[in-house]
Structure formats: structure tokens, C-alpha cells
Length: 415
Ligand code: AMP
Image 1 (spheres, protein in one colour):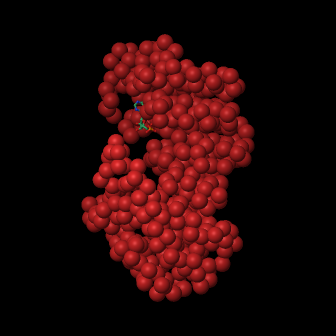
Image 2 (cartoon, rainbow, N blue to C red):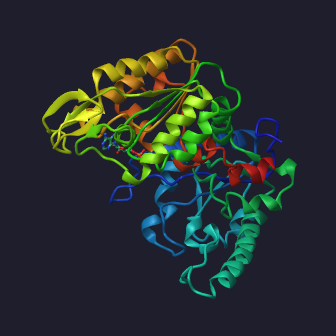
């Protein structure tokens, strides 16, 4: 069953969304992207004549009630966006009566699921080293099943539209799905879009395929780099991680960020790329700064000959041209991680050049997926969000999907 083919008329539908929105100190929402992301699914259920039970987590209350993370703070915003006065259930595990009373068109928002440790299913107050830990974990898994069954009992149909937590096997994102048969559980529109976007870069690839991996550390990206190596034509490596490569090849990198224990790994990646016929694109020059600061003095130097006391902080002009050439002809593009310290306005040039090349390729018909917190922040900083094909809403979930891992939230529905 899919959300498009399902008729929700007269049904109670429990939807897991990601309403983990940032709030300011007065509890006001500072970015409502996540709420807007879930609206198509929520509106489809209401338009069909269903009743909605919405559930989400917010922040990390660690299994305890904490007013700072109460979803009551967003009831008005959700009401306004849905055009329906949203009811609130102050205890997500004791909402049976409120759910039973819902009529077609009604909406009930449950309090933060993570006020219960059962949501995440991790035993609390016991250390992993404790001999009793395994027993505690087993007991917690049992109570997690009960918690999930309670949530499931509120509704006829379950929809998961929370891509941001799809890589977690939590009560509301995966375990709950066991209570519904295949005709009564489905992905929401946002999830469907994310799954499609990942499929476009992992399976349904139009060539050439250029992946751009940046950011500070090669160690955190290695799983993705290895999985992509079998798929891409061009692999651009940029940002802080590339100084580990420069050093591994015998270059001088000054005070640039470097993972000294990953020099062999860098050489191994280069050898693998060669063996697989992947065009590995590394920068040739960089913008070096004499301090880790926006106001640092700058000079353009070879990426493998950075003077002592200077650090590589952005891609240089020659490198930007190399990157753009490998991006502009591509028909599939994936970008994760900036080419420099983009948070400093004086070191955004490399990341901006990448964003511009992606925009150009997209205008020429390429599919471009931008994912992972920092590249999304880059695209937004440059005001170019509407010039790429898809911006993923799920940082960790997207990265795990691209690593080729099965996401529990999706597997629970699709099998
Ligand atoms: P990551 O979390 O690994 O995706 O890395 C993102 C971070 O890498 C951003 O905060 C960037 O500022 C940082 N970054 C990118 N290039 C460099 C660089 N050359 N030196 C230090 N940090 C960098």
C-alpha cells in the first residue's frame, strides 16, 4: 500500500513525523522546515477524511519528562500550518481515550515520545560494563514492544514520514510497524522522496556520476567513500580531509587539519580509485590562512606545499576550476561536506564554486542530491536551495543510506 493509493476516509492514522524543530529560549520555533516537510502527508490524510494522531521526538530528554523539550510548544504552529485546531495529549502512552474520541478531520499531537526510555529502547541508569546490562537490555526491549503496541493501538493505519530518524530502530520508527499488516502501513511523501533521491544516486544512476565528499575528517566519511567507489565516475575529495591525503603523499601541509593515523587509509583510497577506474579529483592549490579565523591573512599556495604556520582553509582558484569541470558535465551529482571552512565568510569560495557548478549541471538536466548538515547549510547560505534537485532532510539517515546500510525505519515497512 502507498500513501497515494490508500483511502484514509473514516480511518485513524498515526503518523511518525520529525518535528524536532529548533526553539529559541522563549520556546519559539526558529526554523520550521521540518514541520513544513511533513505537511503533504498530513494534509493527504485530512483531505481523504481521516483523523490524525501525530507523534515525534524533540531533543534529547533521555527518557525523562522535561518541559524544555515539550511538544506542547509547537501546537499552535502545527495548528496554523494544518489549518485545524490541533489537540494535545500530554502523555503519549496514555492517549487512548483522546485517540478514541477523534472524528474525521481531527488532529491529536502526542507529547514527546522520548520522555519514555522505551522509545529509544536503551536501558537507563546502567553502564554497558555492568554484568546485569544484558538482562536490563532484554527487559527494555520487551517494554519497548509494549510501548510500541500501545501507540499502535490508537490507530488503524501507521505512516512513517520521519526520514531523519529512519536509521534508528526505535518504538515509533520501526517496532510499531509489527502491529500493522502490509495494507495498513506505509511511507509518507517525505520518506518516499528521500528514498527516491537515494535510489537515484545508488541504483538508478545517469552517467557521468560525480560525487563530492568534503568536510573535516576522512574517518567519518570512509564508509560512504568506499560504497561510492563502485558507483561513481568522478570522486572529488575536498575540505579539511584532503590534507591527510596531501601528507600521505609526502606533501608539506603546515598546520592544516590532518588525521595522522589515517595516512595509510588515504593511500588505500587512492589505490582503490585507480584500480576501479574512478577519476579521483584532489585539489592542487588552496587558500591558506595564518590562523583559524575569518580575519586570518590569506595566501594561495600549492596544496602539497603549505608554509609552516599556515593552514589550508579553502580550495584554491585552480582547484575550483578542476572541481567545476568534473561537476558541470555530470548527470548525477551527490554533494556531502564543504570544500573549506565555509562558516567563515572569507573562506567560502571553494564551496561556492561547487554549489555554482552543481546549479549549472542541474539546469542542464542533472539530478543533484545535497545531503549531510554542512553542505545543506552551505547551499542555504548561498541562497541556492532552489537550484539543486533535492536537499535531504536527514543528516545521519542519508549518510547511512548512501553507505548502503538498510534503514530500520524503511525496512519495517517495505520488508
Ligand atoms: P564534517 O562534519 O566532517 O562534514 O565537516 C564539516 C566541517 O569541516 C565544517 O565545519 C568545516 O568548517 C570543516 N572544514 C572544511 N574544510 C576545512 C579545513 N580546510 N580546515 C578545517 N576545517 C575544515
